[in-house]
Length: 69
Image 1 (cartoon, one colour):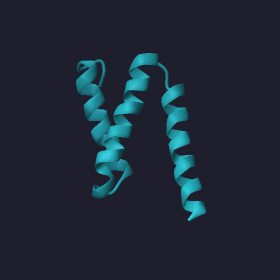
Image 2: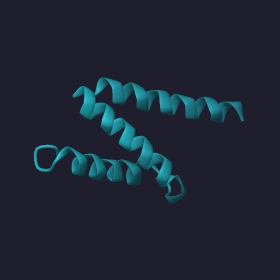
Image 3: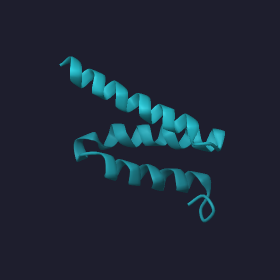
Image 4: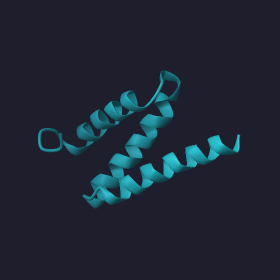
């Protein structure tokens, strides 16, 4: 998307796609915000490492909280 659109449009479209694929409607606001953070990490670093680690940490935190309840 970056090659066809400016960074902001690509970021928002990708964040919407991430949100729809990953969650239920009630989770959309939080997932959309998280997707924007992940996308911004990529735009700043131009590498997938930081967004990958952030996504991994997010998932690990969710699993840990689930295990504790």
